[in-house]
Length: 357
Image (cartoon, rainbow, N blue to C red):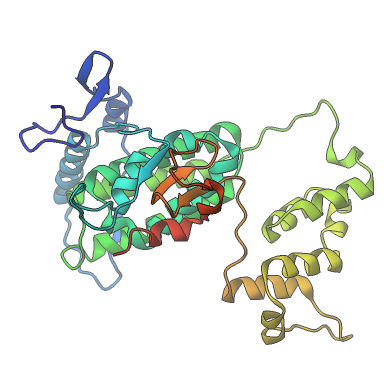
């Protein structure tokens, strides 16, 4: 009977199920490019100022070569072991099913690789990756960690190609690099699955991605209609469609007209009312010299103390009757009399909480 996970007798290769049976996945040619053209991370990023300088030039060169070799040997770019539209979330053993579903298993089996190509799900997947980077990275298995970085690679390449949502990815990579620096400094004190050299190479890759995003230049299109050609009421309508204050600030820098419209007090008041409750307004009330409420300043002040309201085009759903996690448009074989009453949308934080035992 074919096995779904890596067998203990396996020499370490990754396998994929095809119509002709199980076949071994070959490493991509870009592994060789990554081996030949590495981006070395500075040891000052990983070491604290209080740490002693333990690496001589020869030791640094030897260590760098060794970790590149270990990374190339272990980093198989299997994009996704599973492409399932739904999974059963079992939290305890029963007579019919043994074991339980972990966060890493759910992350591997659900089809996140294709979800990032859907504009409705892109922000949802990025937010989920960011939450995992902040607190759950060490709880992932080795296979789940590989899958995590493979999906992250596809996200970065997508942003570099279509120039959309670069700020979201910059925030994700910043949180991920901070977490990795802390884990690498405290190696031995925390659980870090895998060779330390592999993690250092992953940090180098993240720094390279950050540099590529920093150098990203949006191509200007001179033909056709531009924002400057639109009437004021349409420009104002566009600004009122945004749910993120930083998007409003960024758009206000495009033209002088948009700069004036982006300072509209009513615009920022509606944004505050959308994300926060009135009780929170009273705790962080900011008034101008004339006694008017500074809604723009209040928005960014409240954002530091309270999480803003999350808005996604599409999310995962959880069926309370079947204990199944699924994408809503894909559905699942529900046995309830009224399936729609059992469906519950799952936010990124709720997704992580589902697998806390």
